[in-house]
Image 1 (tube, rainbow, N blue to C red):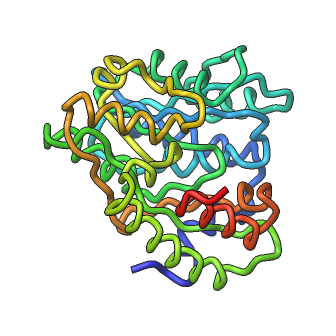
Image 2: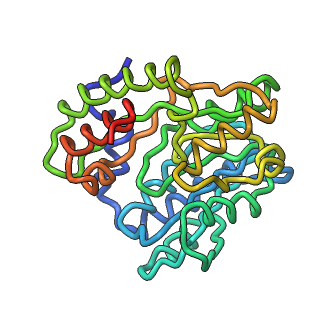
Length: 269
């Protein structure tokens, strides 16, 4: 069941009274509880480009996850010109500097650096619930018939669109995802900020590299499935991530974003 309101446990990260420095210390302290002795079981990989305004709450939410698995968090700093790199280091997680620009290159750099059995994909403008790491990784650790997990997410408004509008928009989006699954391809529903796979299998299918005109996240899902590694498995709303609407704003707002989604859904020019 999708909530109409953004949960308080999510709001606390977006509207914290702590300074960036204070929140970085909080993240660093929490990270020690999940980043324990080797071997690393789960690697959370996050690309970042000029994410000064977003990355600290996102990393803090990940560092404060509750899990019995040994976890590493890797952020690929992709030529940021702001203080993103300094903030990553202040949070105590691993920072990898990738000079070649691009999301595919950044994700591949993180995949190469990762040492966990499972790689979880995260983004710097998203808040993750405290059970997200375990919920996303456990199907991959316990069921060899699953090649990739992908999660459910809600929208946090940063523009003028209210949360209630997004509540209804998300239900419409669910209908399009169902359509994609039954008529097109379930892989279309896979997003890079909320998915996971086994590292060894990801490397076997050439990582996030993809043909022109496709996306790196969905194409990886196709490659893993077609290689015979298993099915795609969706995680329910019990581990819902919350991402900002900045991409919708970049598309020109909710109406323009809705038109773009419908055109893509029905292959309209």
